[in-house]
Image 1: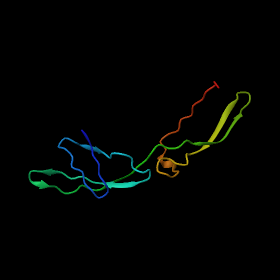
Image 2: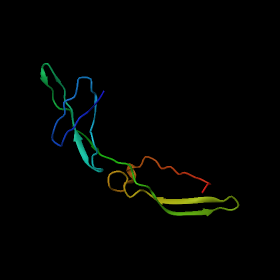
Image 3: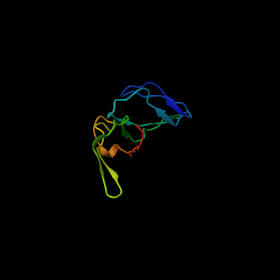
Image 4: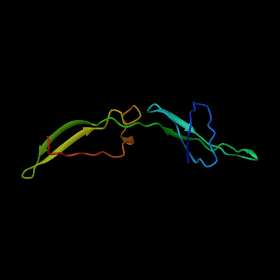
Length: 110
């Protein structure tokens, strides 16, 4: 089960017994670094906190920008495509490390 509830920085969220995941509600600002940790409670009391885990909120990247598209090759023509990575790769900055893959779509229709 995945829990979801409102929480602000420095606050805690109580989850149910069978909830083994939690989703932050709403939208975190792209590039926001967060640290989270979890602990358990049972009849004997509250256990120790686990180690902090860190992550950065990442949004969808903006579109890459074409620098040039030109043809080449004789006798078999081909296209040479050159682009730069998006100006925002999901954290408000341009970081190639955040790009998993790129997809080129080719169409012959107008």
